[in-house]
Image (cartoon, rainbow, N blue to C red; front, side):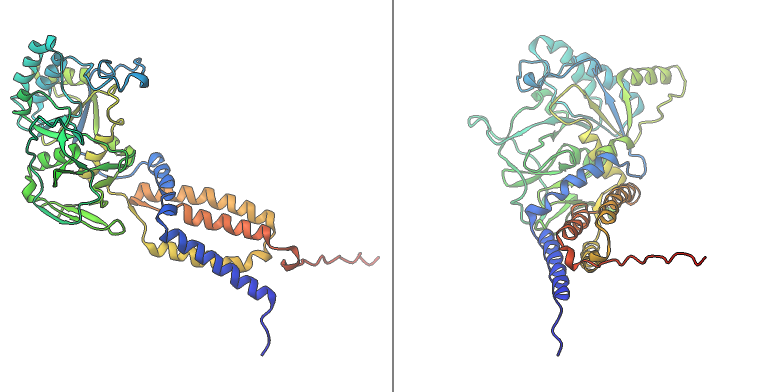
Length: 423
């Protein structure tokens, strides 16, 4: 029986190395986290297709010339901190104009707290807020509540299956509106814990004293759909299995085990954006019998926000609400795609000695550019994100392997000299 050649053994070893490295990447969570970098780049630079959202975002008190001062953002005495830089009268004027168009939900993503000197203006705002059928006001949970203050009860979801350990837990309410406003509104919690949230993952669920409660964005959806927590069922699975929130009429929201939803930051473009002055002009046109250019706000969520507020990333709540309303959920391609990539890489490694190294490097550069363009097109058109680290890493691993292959194992190309023409 003939002994296998050294080249055959080398090829088999290279194929085995490629397969093992690919399997290690797929099975190792720490290596898989690098995939988030490629995913974040995809979502930041793509424009997912989908229907428009029933959401209107109104920017109040925004001054494009205002410069943020990060050093003062954590200081509560600074106008750039949690305190509002917009007066209660401006918010009251916003409510008066928005109610002319009969929106389903009016939500404020800023915590409305004002000074004692603005008490009279705050009362004007409360008088207008009492006319809103479904009013959502932002609040903030905390893990270090005042031990002397009684913990308020928050309605939680009753139909929850699976382990809740991955949900971020809080034990009290920190900053919140005044008691007068809390009595006429629903609280929505705007916490964005660093351990689970970033620019593309936004929490929909929290744990509050053992109960599962909704976040600000999810509470807005519940009010918009006129649902109670008892009508929602939640299935929390292990991290490697998809978890879901089940709503009536077959609606389903895919989430991770930590209660976060994967969103595209550009999803906020599906909403209609206005300034306060635009809303005031539209209300005036409606009063004079003209048809407002912005259209109707009926059956919509109107989200009021102050872009100068540093407590939340720009448009992150609007993008989350728009994603759920339009069901534009980005999901990963099937794992069979990864297996095909590994098999192709293992098969190509045996042909590396036939390809000049310069051609291989140029081909890898071209493949990288083409693959990124294809991945952007796929996530924009079909909301499917293709992995980046595995296929691109496999290609450049093959380039590295080709470089380290000794010259004596590469095919020697014979140069055939052409005989001179016969005179």
